[in-house]
Length: 204
Image (cartoon, rainbow, N blue to C red; front, side, top):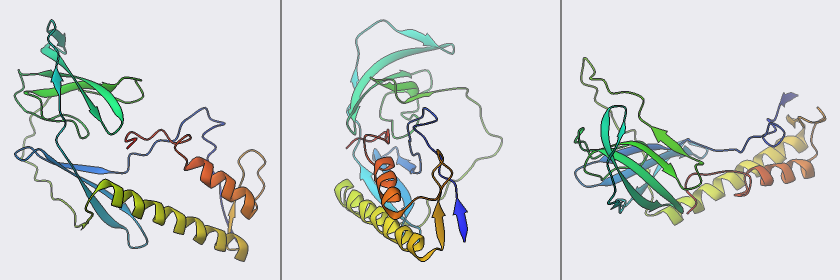
């Protein structure tokens, strides 16, 4: 019989967040390919995001790491963001999915300050790196992707329940050190996968 400890995020004072997606941008078409592997065959599914509509703020230019920067705001996936960009680095790109401003985004954060990306430095590589997009199965839209992902999570839960009942797996309760019953596992698993417990970056 095998055992696996379960990290208690609530006890540790943490909120679960997942950064398992990979983002590939086409700066010429303003398209972002989002890949996330899941499923029994570990296939990567894709969701095509549209370009972000930025509103550049008419305010005094500030400095960040010696660069003159200007602010812009946008809404993306259920959150409001402020981004600081510099035209001194004329690359319309930035971290994560953020892109489309007339310069490099060096600092971007959401209104609640739950997520923030900041530039740490700029350097030119000695050799050019060519990134290859892995093979993936294309999904039409985010709604279809979410449906498939939810089905995958449900099937994973069913598989775990079967393994617990057959004695092949034990899920330990970190608070008591004892093996969970099927009922206890279902309550724990559904709570940890709920929107209230996972602080996901994309809310919709």
